[in-house]
Length: 239
Ligand code: PGA
Image (tube, rainbow, N blue to C red; front, side, top):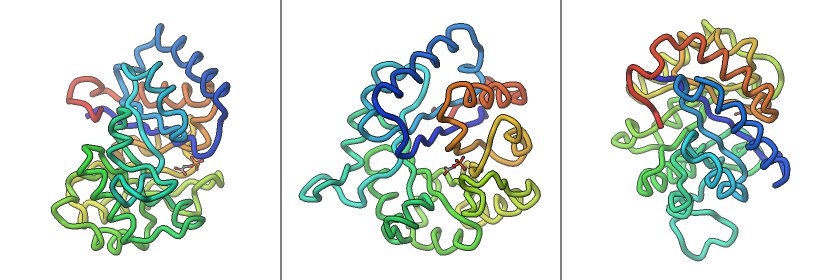
């Protein structure tokens, strides 16, 4: 199985910065095999999904950083899963710790977002920290578990430079697979080109924040992943 790398740009970048990143990325892809070795998902601000889709939809999958827990309708300011799907979005991050911390997102809302994503044909990427794997799983209908990708992101590791010990990540991955079933498990939290390969044998991919913002750093990370993906391109694809 190819590794899945999701770039979460958070609330970074203006339109000119997005265009610049895309231009640099396209130049690299022309001369590289990375696109055959790794499944890449770019999750920009919703505002720029169309821009990324127009330029890169043949080489990356589109991601959203969040989604409404409601369908289309009278929900001012919310972006519904079916709206994202109509833009070509294939993955949506739900329950990111920043959403939980700053926007009060709870297990039930995350579970409703999962429902909306699956109804719209979007794969939800459900973020969990160590201690609430089971509570989050319990809030999501069991029959939907197999449609999820789970991202293990410890709060203490996000944006801090303090990655989690790989042995601990392996333990949490096992717990996730016990409660969600044999779903793809990503690791996220201060992953860079220097440490990404420490998790290559443990997880199915990564959720990348800070190290996805400049093309230089992101490309170094993709190259490191491509170099350890011996099965790349042989056993199927996430995208
Ligand atoms: P980070 O963010 O890579 O900057 O730690 C990861 C995330 O929040 O998904």
